[in-house]
Image 1 (cartoon, rainbow, N blue to C red):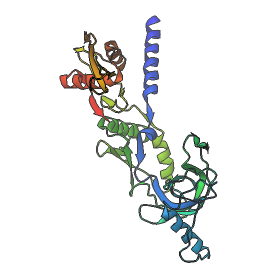
Image 2: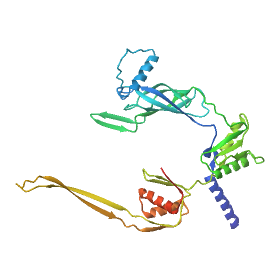
Image 3: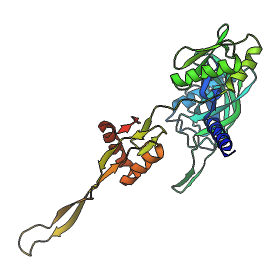
Image 4: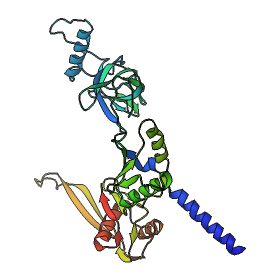
Length: 368
């Protein structure tokens, strides 16, 4: 009886561990052709409280304002010098989601391109948003939300967060749809987010086992692309819903250590391991002190009073003990081994590079 109970518990533990590591195909791959499209436009923000562009330094703001007024039937006398304080030139960006139809509202981000002090309280006037092909796909307009706040008086200035970027929820209306084709002919193509032959193989096996046990409908074209035979018409949507909700156990990624040389950040994934090695780590500190004194000559000596600098240099070296790092087979053991050295994050950069050169670090070292 005890033996049977142990076997049941072992099976449950394996099932729980598999379920914990399994991921949906939706999170691992995307459908070829189903993608976002970037939109951009140039416009004007009006209604600012004296915090707009300084028009003497941003002539394009004045030119855009004159063009806008001319389109509305307002003609200005020649050589008119406009001193605008409540207008700012901006770029408007948005993301057009797949299957967007005319009339659908999307969010837009408005960013100053001049020297405006703040966009808070401004209103974006009608701005066409174009795609990479130069065609207009949406029109943006509305009141902006700026997450920052600032105040200035008497030469003092206080600012919280950023004031030159705002957002308009549902601020653009889609005017043109982008054709999206779900597959080519009888097939759809799934693109893995990360190239991995093992994950592609497991994805194919899962689709064939769960959706078509008697006939293979999925095949891997390479380590990133999987071709799946899908039904035609409206049934394809339901079929894709089944596919993207299937769960597979993705392969572990390549052992990698990411080092940010600017901030000293070091990030390792679970597959990083160490071989037995010895590391000697010590710090050297150089302190330079400069003292300035005044040399005062004796009376009636004819000398001049001069400043004399005296520098002292002190070099301090910490004890560089040799620490033996044992072979680590898990990320936790690797972290413990590196912490035992007592190195600062900036020192770890040099240590990891040396360990990689010595062949003791089994991971790809990437410096960003």
